[in-house]
Length: 74
Image (cartoon, rainbow, N blue to C red; front, side, top):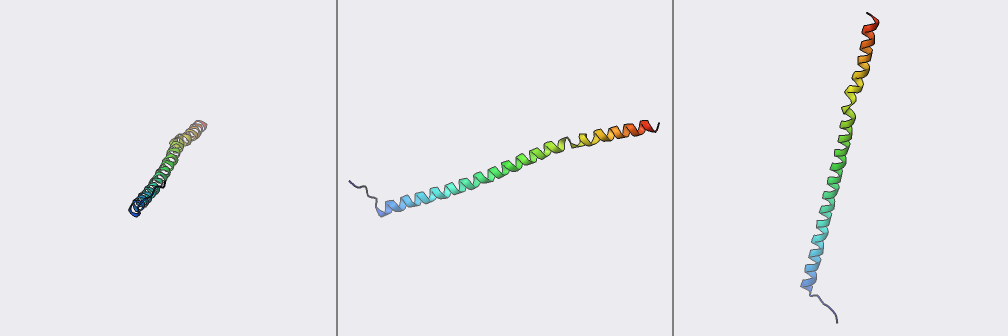
């Protein structure tokens, strides 16, 4: 017993497979784009956290230097 498809049936199956393959390529491309955006967002978040403490780290030594300078010359 053999199952046969007509030429029209085979054409429809091939068209469906091509459509599915194109859809998968588009989804993969979109997924890669979202991953890049997420990675970039995570990098910017890490940079923001790093820069967030920077003014405090600069002000503290300057405050000590200023205090010592004022108290040394008085």
